[in-house]
Image 1 (cartoon, one colour):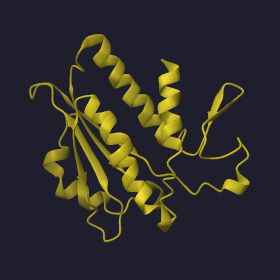
Image 2: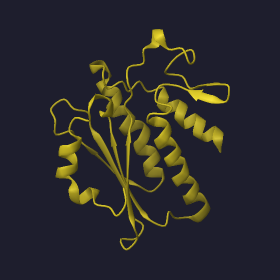
Image 3: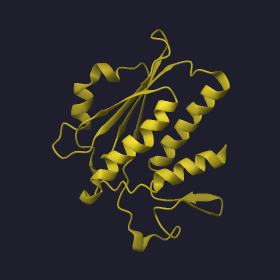
Image 4: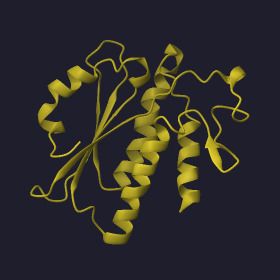
Length: 170
């Protein structure tokens, strides 16, 4: 249902996850804890918040749904941070923090990179579960909140958590 996807994306865009703005650090964590964790939990994922090994770096969210250890495991990636909103320069719509539709296109900070992408992926998994009752594979998902500032701690986190992140397909 497109209205459900639109509502979820609007809610996510409204969270000002500007990783380049130090004042937004609490929003980065809130996006993972208050927005993504409940959705993933509803879809049957176990979630863990991983602190960043880089001092002052934003946290990571790891989620996994293991349907059967003998099935293929897919590792997915997403980031919830965005570049600065540049509110005064925003021309696509009234505000970068409000999802707006113009000429059958949706605009809002993160609509394409990357909140839109993982919102579509979450909606697809939800659809599979509603229609099939199972995904037919295992899924692991790593979300970071520092991609727009060079992914501090991502390499170290992946090295430290290699076994937890192990998958057949990325």
